[in-house]
Image 1 (cartoon, rainbow, N blue to C red):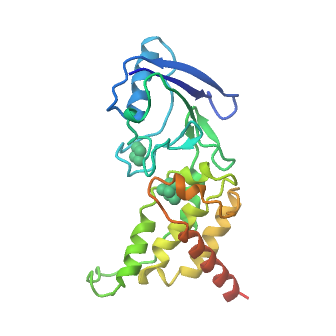
Image 2 (cartoon, rainbow, N blue to C red; image 1 turned 180 degrees about the vertical axis):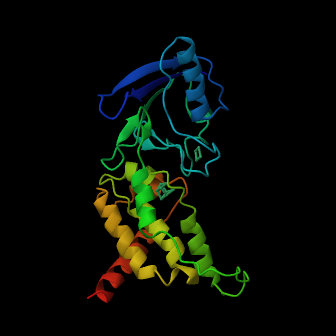
Image 3 (cartoon, helix red, strand yellow; image 1 turned 90 degrees about the horizontal axis):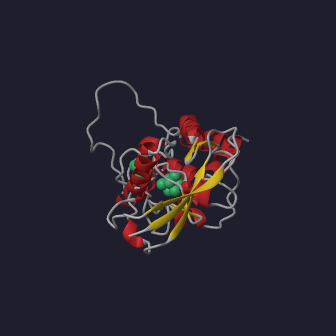
Length: 248
Ligand code: SF4
Ligand code: FES
């Protein structure tokens, strides 16, 4: 099949960017979006041109490295699918695709489709951990966890930190990501000692990074490749409010 790609090219954060047109005439319907970019890049390298820069690692939908907009939709048109798992059979022969990096002030473009997501790392560093006293490892079953809480914590822990939620949100809010990280620890007994401090510190850091506020639009949930539920935002808000009152 044949596809026409319009890809955002930007040399570095300080240079202006522009869309560039690339045509690929021998697209295998089974190849992923990243494999298509590999093929386009091989042609560019042969021609002596700069290949398109994009992030990737696992190519199995589990690491969160990949991600960009396809026709204005974070990770493209398939629900619950990262771009590394999105195969070309979901597009029509001859279709034109517009590929751009995540757009958010807190995610500045580094090059082409790569943005700086270190703001997420700083949110995690602010409180996304539990303290573990030294000593031998406790038996795995000594702390009972209600099944419903274990399931909810696991659902929240599925967040791969890709940033699609921020890119999809009209406010560029990181509420779904931060809520997922606060929830997966706050729902478990091991996460209780720092629960209040965690909510305060992580929400303060998310504000400091320049992400917008959540106004319950829900685009984040729709774009999330791991189907993280909006309920994590409600839990983050509850923990943050409770912690703020505790401090008074
Ligand atoms: S909440 Fe979903 S969209 Fe946001 S970073 Fe996590 S996995 Fe990606
Ligand atoms: S490359 Fe790991 S999730 Fe896409």
